[in-house]
Image: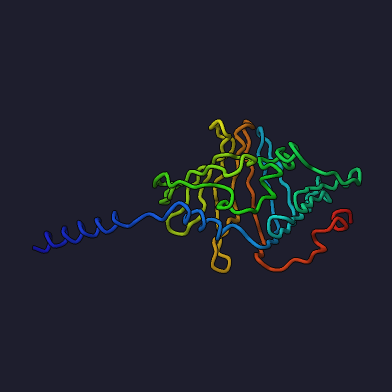
Length: 246
């Protein structure tokens, strides 16, 4: 009798699990945005670039505000004093070698930043995915032993660098575990994998991740954030051309 009762409980318990409705695609994308889109951020960072059996380590101090302002200064010996400033739609770089400021624009934004697997566009974009893409829930899979919802995204604007994306979102904590970036033709261009996330005031934020540019053979970049501070006001002076040239 107990065995039959136990089986009945299991059966109806299983039915209740299957009956749980999956979140909508829009809701899942909003959860990712809630975790990863910030009003401001400050951090000390490290890029570990593995390319063709060689490794390069670059360290930096970075600040960003919304999707309009960012400032990065590299601190490793080889690149010390190299600075990047984004103001609105303009991105500038200061080189200590020639003491000049150069505007990075147009196709140059798609080029590798400091020899990494991330483009300039990849590093300065903080606009929400929900505002840029239409999501479709493509199913449920396991990623790295974690249950995940799978979203397929199509760009709302023709100007997007990656017209299509595919996301794996952790069912338990909404971490963006993995995503793939595609050209309009369907060719896969890049892959991102979350290595570690931490809690910051009720949100989950990635502090260690890996990016692979599939057009670069034998290449990957590990991006590590330390001393992260989110959503604290940053003075306007940080995002000034004077700070860039100082």
